[in-house]
Length: 150
Image 1 (tube, helix red, strand yellow):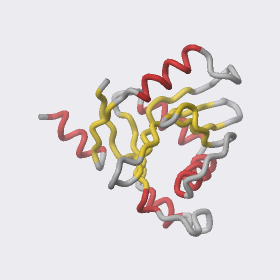
Image 2 (cartoon, one colour):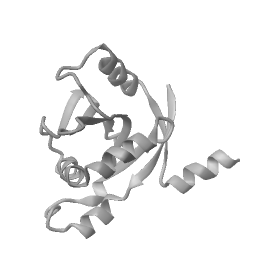
Image 3 (cartoon, one colour):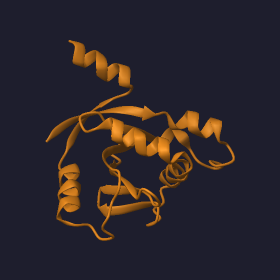
């Protein structure tokens, strides 16, 4: 399956605005993308509802660490950003580092409230679909929109 992904967060700006949270992290080694063919508004809604948890997850990504309660490997290269609480949200991601390129994390599918503790058939299908997706990457939302107007 082919889809599109655009840079949504410039991690460098996050690091500059929160230096105490990102001490020792290299903001240049990762690009964070949003799957623009899924429902980007749901993913943005989850991020807006959980800004501090999102900062913590980005820090884990920059440190190349996984913590099951926040950023868990589901089936490599698919990971889950976990926003535990009310609601119990997830953002499933494609986390890959192609040879000779920067690491890319694509926020591919949002789930507003995950009811089950274990992954059910529907979640496993989402994970498998993400795993099989080939993305065209855009360095900004504007770059992506220009291609849609042509």
